[in-house]
Image 1 (tube, rainbow, N blue to C red):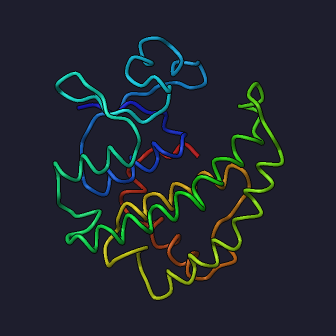
Image 2: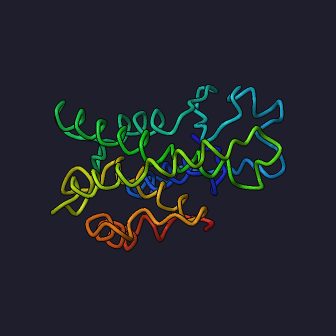
Length: 206
């Protein structure tokens, strides 16, 4: 197996954190977005949407979407558990991860896309970035309440929800947004997670 990604992008960061937490030694191959390699025919055969990450399988097929790849790897390598051991634990973890993705991770990505010069040749709409930015405080307050008394987002051990949230925090800093500075529980979680070996092992390219 091999993972194709662009280490600066938020979804690859999420997957890299997951692999590091699991102790998986799957090789990574860089798809240079700055050079437009994601638009080349060779890569589009792997993912017609031109997005990363992509997991190349031994049978010659490919899996796309970071969450799909993580769930596939979880089936292959169940320990340490990163989604949940019971149906209820897995449902709750997926619920929280989805909450973070839709309400924090995606808005941060929208702000980045609609404000950064890197995407100036695209259809940037500043109003979309403003709307996404305005949405964050209410959502972060809810998340802060959920994190009260917790070391990790959903359990006593890290899960895919922690990977998604930390990737969102990294990406947010690139548009001068600190997701945790005003919220004591998020701030505590972020400081604690930042010290983990998984964060130190991966190349965040900040």
